[in-house]
Image (cartoon, rainbow, N blue to C red; front, top):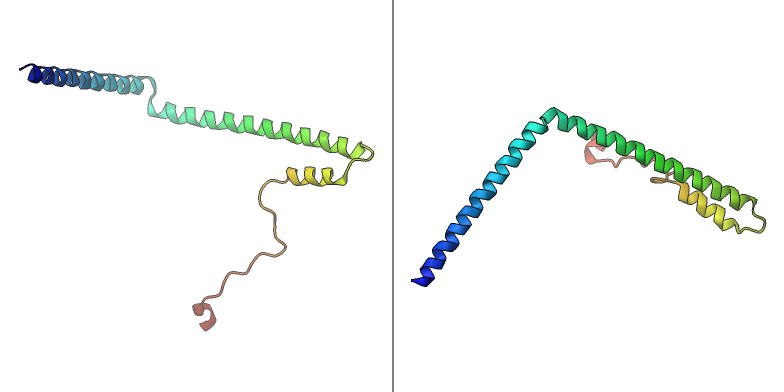
Length: 114
């Protein structure tokens, strides 16, 4: 009897816990819907995006200024190895390098027949 009673208590606890979790979830959804209408979420997202864009732009501009200073120091330092300037100029590049000539699209058998 004791064993079945503990099972019943466990089941009852689980049931109460599930109900309370469901209530919490419902309250959170309801409160979120009240405080953040769908249009506000989109506007907030746009605002965060533009703020992130501005902070990234400021960081990149600051990095450009720092590289300019380092390059000026390397140019004006007598006896500085020339590899330093080459490495600084390479570090400034961002993105893929442009090839000399663009590749022609591959021909297909249908192209040859025409």
